Length: 252
Image (cartoon, rainbow, N blue to C red; front, side):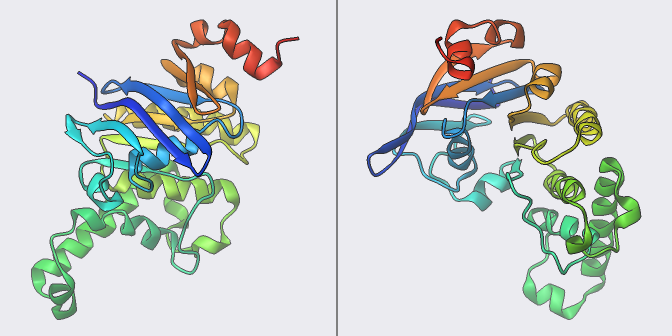
């Protein structure tokens, strides 16, 4: 049974069709990649899945519940989290505080309870802090917990965003170009971290331009071109597909 399923999803912006009748599914425990040239519709597809955009038509299911058109916080509460092409952090807050934000959906206390600082709320705050710290340990940044996020290098900011996404305890994690801007050593470490994340029971759907990373860690690949799904299957099949070769290398 699919964890995520899209059926004939379409989204246009004026006369530009960004996603054109795309259908695919993601199985529980899978690492699946979406690839394609710039402008293929990959990030638009992520925005539709995560609720940033609403589809013009078609259906999106997550855990057998329809999420197409729902608000991002509702989709996050269902167990889906994501990162972005450019890390979006609170730069004046500490690294640990940024990750603690990811625990918000799991908090039981509202504004009034937090203001009164009741004993149970204080216990929950300590639990949130410890859970956030464990995510930083997982990505290897616990030593920087008290450092302002704005003082971090680009690759470290990506890891903080990943830790924050994991702090939501997602069942499905969307990674939007996680290797962008990383050096070769950082990309190797990222590949290992993504594999370890899957071992923790998190299903992963990623957009990525680094083909070596995609081929190394993905079990299944969906290829988009001008909003259309032109190929889908295991890496060895996709990389030898004539349509995919034509898109990346040209028909000449």
